[in-house]
Image (cartoon, rainbow, N blue to C red; front, side):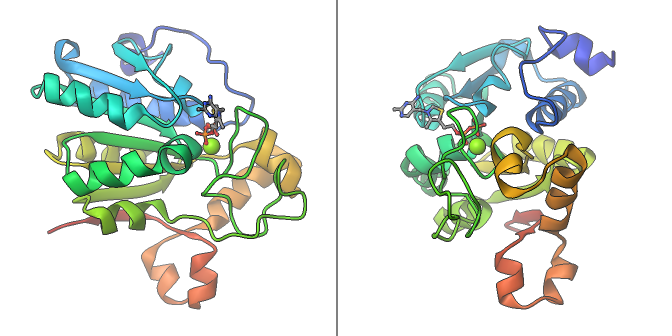
Length: 251
Ligand SMILES: Cc1ncc(C[n+]2csc(CCOP(=O)(O)OP(=O)(O)O)c2C)c(N)n1
Ligand SMILES: [Mg+2]
């Protein structure tokens, strides 16, 4: 067990499915907390409902607030207003933060509230059986779209940047070091900061979209995520179907 794990985890095992990326994000969060030596007396993790909402609670050894579906940012805003000196970190799923909770997300970015929001984007409602989310790719099959989703997904980093977030970053969980560094940067940014972790969901997304084994699921995630340099060589249509990874920040 690493020092981060010993210091920051309450549990030895998590309840995530085999191959779920949320556990890797949990590891990145506790490494960031350990490397920043965060003071637990002034630290709060807030989550809503969904598999991703279980990342901080019950796993992280710190104060955690497990709230209503889509409302984590609202609770976090209240906590930050009450205790401005506290570091408040929201951890959410893509459905939680951008479907039911989308309104809270964009307004917190617009108001530039000093929160760190970490989103585990597995492109689906994982916990409730695999329904289409506002992040589900065009054509992807879900429990509610057997023929494939007919809508364009949100680009979450562009969404919060357009709403006013000074810092956003996106990495797949297969690049954990980048993720840790961006989570640290987001926590240290005294403004609204957003980190999107692309997280594979073999159970709900993979099995409906022909990623029959974990290797295929992880290959899909790695192919989906492209650098800005790679994006520059692709057509706008090709880029729109992928995740351009990296940091998006004001100078
Ligand atoms: C008001 C309300 N509506 C719907 C639900 C059902 N619900 C719980 S979690 C969830 C979606 C979770 O998806 P996401 O946030 O992407 O997390 P994941 O499980 O994929 O990590 C839904 C629809 C609920 N608990 N409360
Ligand atoms: Mg999800």
